Length: 340
Figure 1 (cartoon, rainbow, N blue to C red):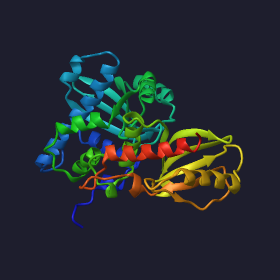
Figure 2: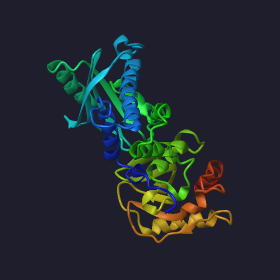
Figure 3: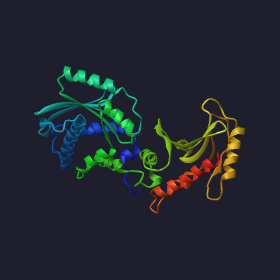
Figure 4: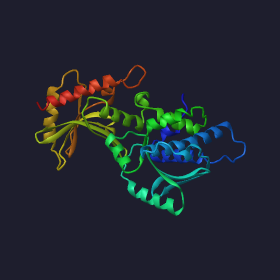
């Protein structure tokens, strides 16, 4: 092994993010153990700044630029709970100059289907009953989110904090040597643009989906990481009443697939064969396309391009974005030629 393993590169699920955020919040408590080293002191300072960072972000969303008490907040105690009223993380923060109750929904890639309004209602009630101070609502996500979805989250009362916000924050605390902290920050900084393709994890594939959807000229219609299934759909057309489209599918080893579908009933192999034949008639030597075996179903793959033949790399093994998009555009053209 030529490189030290990274805990968060191995574990990309939400419980790992929960654990890190809760751990960092706990580190804001006054240090009372014997012989703390410099890292403990640095982590304590970082954790306190993190709490202030969350509070400031929320208040800015609410149009409150400054909180005089916050500037001088000296944290005396942070009590962290997990899954209180099904909220991922909650933290009661108390200090000499103020009290705050922070609730955090954190996500890596999953979509948010949680009742955010209910979380706020329950938290507001507890704040009154136990005199916990101001309520701070945070939605923290390290994977990408569409602009409309972000806006919807903030309309529902949660401040959306993304990966770039976190990176900017942790850049200010770059002298910490703690292994857990370093692993988290290093994994956060890994992107589909900087990591070798052979070492990509979910975060990198999601980053690619976000890039293709929002920053390329490809007309991506859908990309999701749904319950462990990553896929990108685009270039949908109608052919003989059937839907035909391109898909990059995790279940197919991230190959680029030509698919035909009928959402209501199974498609016969005869129909799929005709579409497959049409593709083969229109291809030439520039297309690295392969036939697939056909089996009747509502969604059928009739041809594929292996991921190594569309996901192109630079000399250092990282993605060549321009070359990759150019390659994908070729297969858009091939699909369009089949219906012309």
